[in-house]
Length: 212
Length: 212
DNA sequence: ACCTGTGAAGCATTTCACAGCT
DNA sequence: AGCTGTGAAATGCTTCACAGGT
Image 1 (cartoon, rainbow over the protein chains, first blue to last red):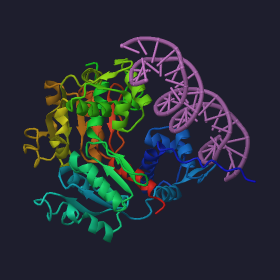
Image 2: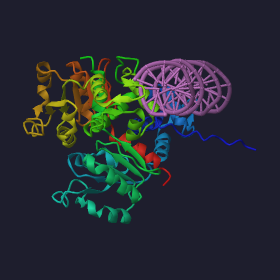
Image 3: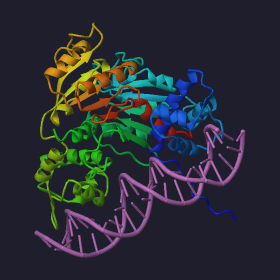
Image 4: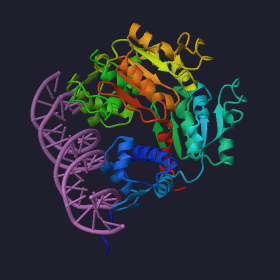
């Protein structure tokens, strides 16, 4: 009867934009704006209106023709669709300078991410407080993960340790990993893995300088 | 989108990959591999051979048919084309936890990036040593930039300060900026700007969790 | 009059497939 | 035989343009 609809998923490329729209919308909401048009939002985030409408349409049309989008509703819907309507528990593995910097990042809690624990392998660091209560030993990782549901693991270990740690959290059922260690890690299916790589960013910039 | 495009020939999207190939090739070179095929490299970095050949072809064909690529030559050419065959001077603005973590990152120097100075606005931080000699006052920024050529400015200030600082370094002639502050900054033409945004990364991961 | 939602056009990037060199 | 380099096809993403609702 009904032809099978090729469920056109939301393009990977749209997600970072939707996150940006949300951040701006929350700001506009705080400023008391009740309604926002795609043009208004596009100007505010530096893109074009068609892009905004297309991106929002992946989550279903919740605008009003002739008017625009209800700011509150749009924020609420975006938060829900992006999975930000519930608390997300995060752990940081690697309590060095970078891990500590991320632990202290305030924008964290603002979007519903709660830092549940930090881990480190160095006995001199274990037990100290880096912003999320006492740093736990990496030996306690599996015990902790079987006692607490954790949604995202942030990896800020040295490069050599990263892949092993990722395998361990994945095996313990953590469904998403953000890797800051400067290696290309891999994760099995069912685990979302994103990489943030300083050296790649610097090299990309370096290319645009190449003619100096 | 953001950085200027000096050469239409090479897609923006290929640059991070080329940086990754380079890192892996340097590793293979150290292991004594004289020659590498696109298939071998593809397996090592987790992509397919056609992608590798296409990407390398943007820089001109320096492989040998029937054989593969000479590892040393390929490393040398990639380094040159990516602008890594000369020293790049970098400053970090914002000597907080994140700026300090980046300053201490060892992989930095390995690719020819030299940290020339760090700046901060907080008088309690100015003068202390965070890994690149004494932290300078942000008031000295313009003086420093007119006395020293700087290729890349890394911004690790609070969100509120980022845009102003970017305007200042851009006005002083710094051609590339890497922004870690959680705001979407803008830069005029002629300034390459890249953004690294923790909160966007977390939200993107959160989306893939949305059905929990 | 204004603004959304969306097919379709226009671009960009990735993958295929094979000619041509070693 | 093996592998690169590359047009061409396929796929994915962005922008256009307008029908349709307020």
